[in-house]
Length: 157
Image (cartoon, rainbow, N blue to C red; front, side, top):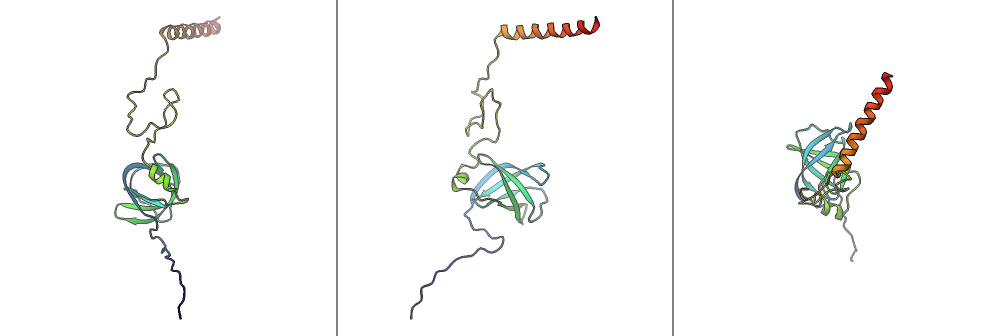
């Protein structure tokens, strides 16, 4: 007599399920109070990451991990190993987000330069912010000085 059967693998509490991608990038971890701490993300998957840090974190502690190109990801600590912690994302990332992670700068630039991060590998040296023409700067300086003297005279008379 034959039986058809299907086997399902179940993950134990705290065990890894998703494939890890090795990375080696500086990042920012924010604790429950929002205080930023520098950490190094050493691996990343859709379900979590491993961070190296000198911080003392508790298992289950809620945190946010900054992933360049993806954003600040709400997470919680699931294990401690050596000088770091395994963290599980509260909402898993997509495969595309994992592939895109750490490919852009985390710095948001001033609107005069451009909004959003620079493409990876661009250090910003080729960006020309520009200056106001000399006549505009002189006119602004004279106008502001005249207004200031006008206020001084108005309060002394």
